[in-house]
Image (tube, helix red, strand yellow):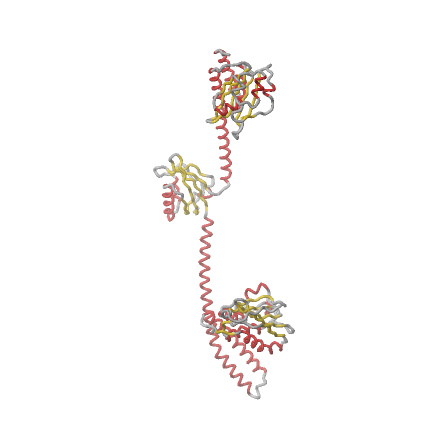
Length: 560
């Protein structure tokens, strides 16, 4: 079958009209394929497109010459092939024209070509539609007669495919342009909500800095919009405070060397407000040109808070120094006053004792009051002196190996008369204990303080129990009472000097608030610890843990 020049001219004209009236590349391909097949008098024309995933090629349109019974060949159902299958698959795989005059042998047939041959089709021609360097689609034509390869027809198909390819490329460019514009709008919307200034500049070979992009957030950083038609390096250098320009110069030199850089400085904004700004940037090279992308943030509030924090810290340190000095002066004053009080109190005690020996004065209640008050003052002075000595490190305990059982039993017996007078039941629970390194006099002072407090704060009819047991590393001495107890929130202050629990002050029970502070100082001087907790039967329990002397001695069990 040969085609005359007039027929080919008519074919080209029909294709041109079809393409020019199309609104899209796909429509142009469909219409051009139909126009070309119709002008050539061929039986069927199809347009196929490669799926976006690049795995299959699918039929987009199918045209059949009027009066040609090819309904079972074309069909209305979707159709797709893999690479190499049928005319579209072969063209897609090869990336070039296919002109086939033997449908039964020349192509890989998934079954469709054999059916077409049964319906009278003898020739199949396919041409690829390229989008850049890939096959995007295939123009496929079928004839019901044998048509030998015709270069003019192929040239016309190439022209048609070229026009469609250019339309595809134009469509892709338009889609990319629209997508880029949409992405830019989305980016701008996000950036507009951020107070930071995002920017991009080019560092030119002569050292000047050309603005490429600046986000709208510059107003919150620079108090206005930075001009972009000038050297940005010189512009910023003028607005940076003189004492910070050296930092900016180092930042600029680092940037010119193509290294990441950052710095903080003060900038005089266009609104005449000085702000602290933090700038960090990273290099980017394109086609031998050096660009820098960065972020500038207004950190004025953070810097002001940091400065205020430093100021407050300095004030706090000064106050701590003053408090330490006052504490030292107080301790010295207490020590001096206590020392100076000892002699007058001793004189008062001596004269009171002499007066009480006089027959006519011995029974006077006034002298008994003076004696009790003097004894109380002596105890108070001794406590104050003890605390001052322990605080100043001038008191050392004489640690010697001792067994605590005898010391505990003696202390309990010495306080029994006081307990019976209330009356309060005083008991001791103790097994054999290992030795501890201790100062007998000082440990007795600890026991006396704990026992006298327990008896004093236990109402008549209550009980006080002294117990002791050994653990793997310590000997624990406990004094528990069923007394008035201590509010849970006040345990942390219990060993603070001059502190008295609210349960004691509300009942107007006399005390100085020094005994437990002295007790704690003595225990800690022995390398031990003292704690307080609610008692097992109400009241309070104090636990003194003293380190064992070596590994000698039996190990007792905690009383049940």
